[in-house]
Structure formats: structure tokens, C-alpha cells
Amino acid sequence: ATPTSIMAGSGRAAEFGILFKAGEHLETTHRIDTVILDKTGTVTNGTPVLTNVIVGNGMEEEEFLSLIGAAEKQSEHPLAEAIVQGVQARKIALSDVREFEAIPGYGVKAVVKQNMLLVGTRKLMKRNNVDIASAEAVMEELEAQGKTAMIASIEGEYAGIIAVADTIKETSLDAIARLKAMDIEVIMITGDNQRTANAIGNQVGIDQVIAEVLPEGKAEEVKKLQNSGKKVAMVGDGINDAPALALADIGMAIGTGTDIAMEAADITLIRGDLNSIADAILMSRKTMRNIK
Ligand code: ADP
Ligand code: MG
Image: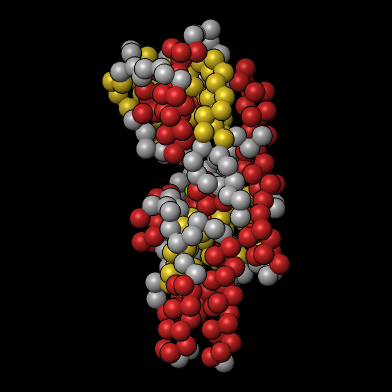
């Protein structure tokens, strides 16, 4: 590729909010045959809202939310933010937190008002021997609606369920259809529950969904696809996505996401719109055609 055509291509892309870090990335992008999309903040808007509170231990809802909200106030996770906002919107004061621990990929652990609290996934509960059999039916119902449902326990006993819902970006469905029409394989990846992820995948036309991936697992999935001969673009916004963005043949960071994701990626998509993925690939193909 000549430096002039690369420069012209990069300049044109920049006008569309697609920033290539280096000329070589504009060349590599035309080979992409597989696109992995992070779910939260990439396919969805990434600003979940508290939708359901189910108290399972006879406690007053206000007391339950005061404890959960206090624990989540210490977490930086977007799910935690949604919960805290929801609790505060109900004008409930948060209790005092004595100890706190974030458990990436699982949830949080905290001591609030002398109570040992856990909030997070089924796996978090199983690891701590909390019996959650009575939560399962409601969990499944919420997850089938595409909501992220989290279980809470107090002093080792099941205490309730809290669910949040994220909204899908208006442009995601069309953007994904465009990629598929270009014969590109589209996969969605998430740390979220499989049932929740499938429900979201369904709404945007993605049938390949890799869910319940632990934070370090996204890069492993990229590696697996590369080992099977695929040229992989990873698209994400979070700190969790950074290793996968770095490892992929092309990493694309969403411009509204974290700085760490942008540093790890080869391309920044200034607009959150996933149409930029197809645009980037088409521009790269065009640049390479002009060269040959
Ligand atoms: P995602 O890719 O959806 O951001 P994570 O790996 O960060 O996934 O988290 C996976 C799951 O762990 C979440 O879907 C949630 O069930 C649980 N979890 C993570 N952080 C928290 C938190 N602060 N409070 C409660 N649950 C959490
Ligand atoms: Mg994300």
C-alpha cells in the first residue's frame, strides 16, 4: 500500500468518526471475517436501570434496598450504578458499609450494618453455599426478558433478587444486519447470564452468543477463533475488553467507553453507532482496491 492512499483513506475515515491508530490497521481491516461484539455498552447503551426488586426473606423492601444500595455504592460497575440510582430515586438512605470487596465477574461482598451481604450471580451464591433454589423461577423469568437479575444474600441466607434492564442502541439491529450481508460472522460476548444474553442477541439478530465469560475469558475466545483461522475484530468499551481488544487482529473501541479500551484498540469509533464497523471494513476494502 502506498503511504498516500493510506493517508487519504485514514483522512476519509476520520471524517466519519473512525480513527485508525496507524496506517497498517487500515490495511489489516479489509481481511476481517469475524466480528465479536461486547454486549453492555457496545450493542446496548450501557446505562441499565433498576426495574425489579423482589424481597425473599420477609424483610421490608426499604431495609433490603438500604443494605444492597450501600454495598453497591462502593462498586464502580455499571450494574452497581444502576442499583444505587434506583435506590436513591426511591428516597431510601444508604446504610453504613464496614467492609467491601468487588469480585470481578461475580458481584460484590460487603459488611453492612453487621450483616454479611453478597450480591451477584448464581455462581457467587454457590461458591458461598447459599441455597438459591427458591430464586430460580423468578430469575429465569427476568432473564428471558433480557434483564440482568442478581441475587442477594444476607448472612449466608437467600434474601432477594434485584434486576436491571439495559436498552439496545437504536442502530444495532441494522448495523449487525449490514455486517451479516457482507458475509461477516457476528458473535456477541458477555459476562452476563446466558439466558439474558440470548434474549438481547435475539433482538439484534445475533444467534452466536458467548455468555458467562469471566473477565479474563474474552481474550481466550478471541484466541480460539484466531486458532481456527479467523481474522477477528473485537469491538468493546470496557476495561474488561482491553485484553481482547489488544489480542484481536483489529481492536475497535467505542469512543464513549473507557480510556483503557481506547488505548488497547487499533481503531476508535467516535460514534457509539455500530454502523461504523461496516463503514471501517468497507473503507479499508476500498483503499486496498485502489492500491492493487
Ligand atoms: P459484563 O460483561 O456484563 O459487564 P461482568 O463480568 O462485569 O459482566 O459481570 C458478570 C456478572 O456478575 C453480572 O452480570 C452480574 O450478575 C455480576 N456482577 C458484576 N458486578 C456486580 C455488582 N457490582 N453487583 C452485582 N452483581 C454484579
Ligand atoms: Mg461493555
